[in-house]
Amino acid sequence: MTTSFSIHSPKATNVILHAFDWPYSRITENAEAIANAGFKAVLVSPPLKSLKSKNGTPWWQRYQPQDYRVIDNQLGNTTEFKKMTAALNEHEILIYADIVFNHMANESDQRDDLDYPNSQIIQDYKNKNDYSASIRLFGDLSQPLFTEQDFVQAFPIQNWKDPWQVQHGRISGSNEDPGLPTLKCNENVVKAQKSYLKALRHLGISGFRIDAAKHMTLEHIQQVWDAEIAQGTHIFGEIITDGGASKEEYELFLKPYLKSTTLGAYDFPLFHSLFKVFEKDESVSGLINPYSVGQALAVDRAITFATTHDIPNNDVFLDQVMSEHNERLAYCYLFGRDGGVPLVYSDLDTSGIAREDGSPRWYDSWKDPILIKMIQFHNYAHGQTMQYLEHSANHLMFSRGDKGLVVINKGLSEKTVQLPNEHFADLLEMEGVRVTKQVKTTDNGSKKEMLTKVTLPAKSCAMFVTTL
Image (cartoon, rainbow, N blue to C red):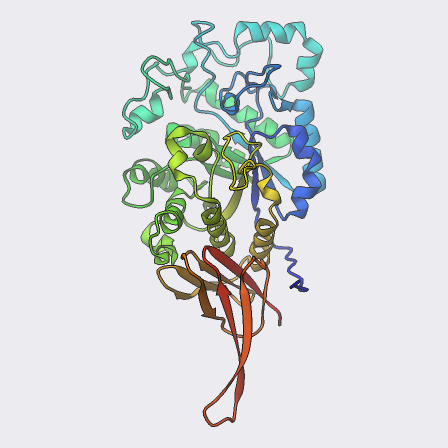
């Protein structure tokens, strides 16, 4: 069956495509297709100078800055970055940049000092003066951006539940690993970081993701992302927690951030709610207004997701990877609900995790036809009131004003529910979903009404839009 209704909405929220570790040129080439898929923003990997090699470098190298004053890394340089922003702007797609301000690159195997960039890079700038000038964002490239006085005393974080250690210690792999040099919140550091953000805004960046925000002091965050920087800019922090209110990490890190800033954040409380419902087989009732019980962030500050780049790419988080079926159900809930800005993760197979058919799990996952239709529903129903209509341990049905309806069945057997009226058309048209209509006559035969029912197979969902 093919549907024939229009679901265009000019007032869509900025659904974000996280083009994780994509070369800038690849984003440029796909700008039109990204727009056609319904995305309104693209989050790109850190646009700065980091280690690159002819043989390539691992993704985490992008999170070890050598210099902010130029864009020159494995994914491209300033020139290619500008071409990307031009292409995205042409298709009215916002550009968000991943920002790494907590630390600089671990280069302890090469040197003992803390000059950034190091003397070899400074010399390289001089030797390639024309090229360096062409990719320069700001500042004097003949001098280091940071020196030893801009870093806190070196020690590895050992107690990850101690806020002082987490915000002043070095992120390291072990006691033998010197770790990532942690920047101070001083005048020089704040000035350099604000200059960098201003330069990126001049290039057309309209959103910032704060990497490792839980490792930065609130004072540092407040001084860098002040009213001037925040004006007209969507900013959200990455503060990884193991759940919502009452969980220790939430209380220690996320709660103070939310209280002391007006910035957004990754909605890890909601993610863990989704994970428990779909992966741990807890009741769907956990998804009925989770904010009211502290298990989701306020809708105007939340970046919602089914996976982030850390989950499949860091061993410590691999147990939080959802199955393909459950991730789809999670996206159905996220795109169906009211509030939050959904973020869709798509990589170039950095994790090596495969789908059931053997193909890379998140490689070009943004092109998935079902996901694209979910984005269409999200954009179409934006701003419409969410009302929960029916639920059991394994199924949930809710409406979005008079625009649409969402039904999710996470159970291992099919589920049939009755829709509120007959004026709905199936948007997703997932395999096995059956919509049936029958005429019901009253006992005295004086009145007839049409009943519409939908039967969902195990681990499936449906999104309906009104046809009136």
